[in-house]
Image (cartoon, rainbow, N blue to C red; front, side, top):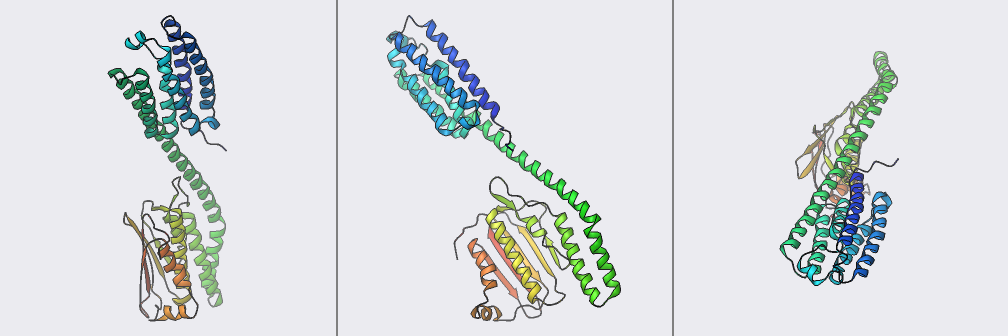
Length: 377
């Protein structure tokens, strides 16, 4: 489904302005026809302006026609037609500062460029048209400077409006997607609560009552119940228009009966690649806890946003890592920790600190800059 174009009204206005200013140019030619040095060239230029007006109006009214080459071609064609005034107007008309052949028709290209590419491009296009006006007049008089200010100012204002409209549309689209995702998550939560969670809760309760092997099944059911509750409660993961994503929901879904996850109240936006790597890193660290920390071990995941960097800590109260164990694993060919944790952090340009003692648990502290520098090892 194609989304609505937030700046379509600006394009429509530019097309209408192009038509209105063309008829003004026609009127100017009719009024000054007896004063031109080359009347035939004036009508020729007016004919070219008519054809170009039709082309640009059709292009600006259609989404497929709003391209950089179209708007900048408009700037070039308008500037060339504007300069033909050197051969069309008489010397007396130049002295009297009569309107150039394009008159106000030349004000549209900077607006079109600004709508497409923003205020800087709009100001640049206005400057180009203003320079063409100055060269056609043969001097950069006060009137030429005034026109330059108006052209560049209109390009800046319209460009700023276009950029603001696009950003507002992107924010609205993200809000609508988040609202729809939240509504769907709430619907699923109700369905899960009425079915899966109730069954898991009953299995957990009954298994604890029976004891023995049933108690082990009750523990597993309890873990799955906690995981489902965390999944339902977490905000839906989403990639923003600028390529960043919130790290919080990716970590929140890892919470279980034995894993506690703490995240800030506000979004922690990072590049999508960094979010993916950190999510995999924490998952690997928790997997190591499950494998090596021992029965009954608990883990804590803490996410901190320090502005210029993000800190992720994974701590457990398990058996700890004996001195030299990682080096022995690496020499034996088991490189999971080195590759999955340390390697990921190195790729993100971050640092990692490991603190562990036998019987005192293990803590990984990962610091990643807000703008990761990839490829450094």
